[in-house]
Image (tube, rainbow, N blue to C red; front, side):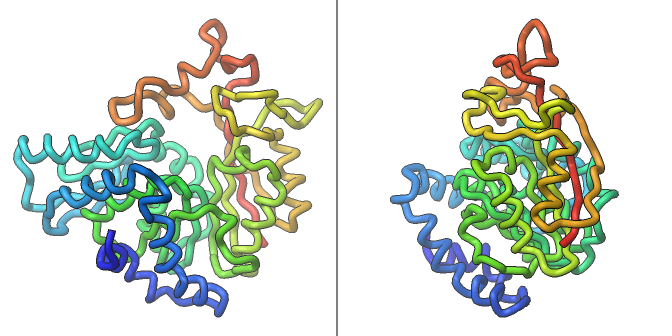
Length: 329
């Protein structure tokens, strides 16, 4: 990957202004991104780069960021053979966990129906009009596009999984949108006390943290005064203990450390200095929302549940239920 590649996808960052800490971090990003994408960081990077280079060029035409399928198309509609080639290239960047997308007639039917989660929260969060937004653990950026549709002046997503970054590059190749950026970093690589974002999202990240309170404090340090946190995470319905600590795996995930109940989660937020805490949704994860597709692989939620009792995981824990909370600094 050469410098022109980075300029193509990240030049828009130069126009995002904020406090001095943010602008210093912004100016350092090109070097940090280039370092994160050296072939030594992941053996598949050269192959991914070749796939990206083969993506066809179509003029930017129709962009629909506010629908179930984030759509990019143009008047130059590819014929069936071109669509088949495009689908083959995009599938080589799988598994696709977040979506769905529709790219010049190719529908990426991802494992997660990310639009369903978005539907549960979009009417309960603060206006994003002209706001600077951070999406922590954004995957390939699906929710970043949805927030851009709500008028955000810029949405910066961060995720250390390089495959998801490549998926973002593939989508952005067709979108050519200067408001949405995905960076290959974990939250720990952001400067302490950045205090720059109007809204910060952490969705599906908290239960992967060995120290969930440290994660909440780090999210708080990214928000400016009055900013809003949108937190989505696994919860349990257990008033007695208030907290599940899986012994090994949870729904076949190895890195699940703590699953609180909703009351405990609100206590954690309060202890970390958040206020105006609101629980806006609790929903059991269903096979409509998370399922195996040709884009995601052969196994998904139904394979992680007890075949004789869908209310239990295969390990015997309560089946996945997720809560969404909002809170302010």
